[in-house]
Length: 293
Image 1 (cartoon, rainbow, N blue to C red):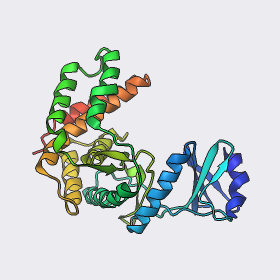
Image 2 (tube, helix red, strand yellow):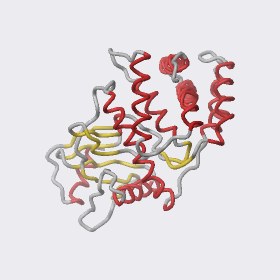
Image 3 (tube, rainbow, N blue to C red):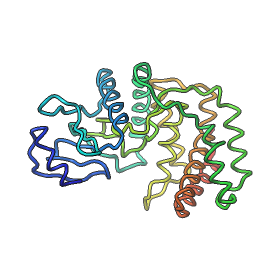
């Protein structure tokens, strides 16, 4: 793939002084640009449209670099290549920083407000966490004979989610919120990246996904319950400085976080990764044992 990218770079009139792979499907060019490879043309075009709308809403996302002939992307053989300007900033390393956690809450809320406009202009996959829990997730757990999580814990969590699900606001969400997809420069948010998984779902999914992801970080300095709950409070406070959450949403946050970990257990079971499935179960137990109020 590196050789292909080197061959097509002249289409943007860019000389390759340094080409560095930063993700499985993305390369940084000369510290100034990022080129991303897609197999799905529709997903690529949707992501371009999302970026254009978000930029109109003053949301910091990567701006597309046109080719010399004014095209937004290049097709080469069976792949599609999108060039964008590299956003300033880097990923957060101190994941326990409560000030940054609050800023992440603000960043998620700002993105949600802008996503409402995207939702009016672009069609998205309308997904349901509840239906996933009752569908492929349960099927994977059953096929595994409930070896990692027992059926009682699964059923209790799903029943609680079902009891509140109709009251939880749904909208377009990012679906992959973690510090790797949010960039910061000098302590302030400088960019959002990676909208490949964006979908309609319950809006607190993004908050919960981010918070559970903090527990899944492989670090020698693991969160204590007190430290993590402080981060939970900071993220929610940041979000609510822009968008108010209903009481039902706030009450549902622990349940949704448990569901996300059950989702990961089922996903890793499906790809025969028992180690990661057990780690997700440990996070599930950690959440269960926390006092949120």
